[in-house]
Image 1 (cartoon, rainbow, N blue to C red):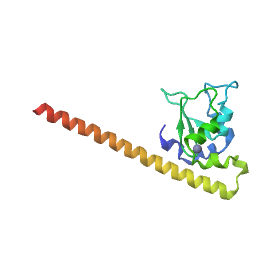
Image 2 (image 1 turned 45 degrees about the vertical axis):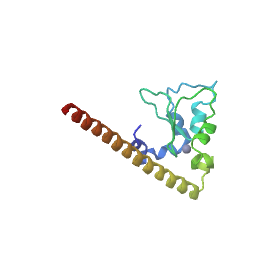
Image 3 (image 1 turned 90 degrees about the horizontal axis):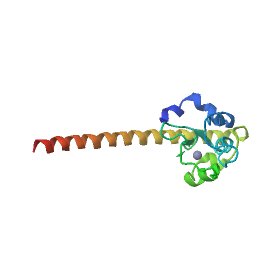
Image 4 (image 1 turned 120 degrees about the vertical axis):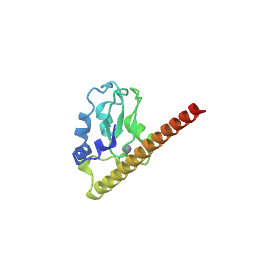
Length: 145
Ligand SMILES: [Zn+2]
């Protein structure tokens, strides 16, 4: 999941619970489980599946990605334990219940998270590329011996 996918204005709609629920199409856990789409969305998650990991969910606010869900996992609890500094889970309010101040604070924090995540991804990419380059240079050097 590329961070740019969730940084556009279009994703403003993900602030709303109803829209987050809709992302959980094909989610493997149903009403007999603790981590239903409804509970996931209530805890701020959106479904961000990839080919290899169909059960990845990401907090729309802190951008924490969690996978390997078990039927008895309580989304809110998991969210808190894996991302204790998330403002959304700390507020635990619906979009409609937020004060303007809370909303702006949430938005500011979310922007910060997006920037730091984008930054980290860029650094990782650079490090991967450097590693590969170094390996290539070594290979060439060894070959010449
Ligand atoms: Zn979060």
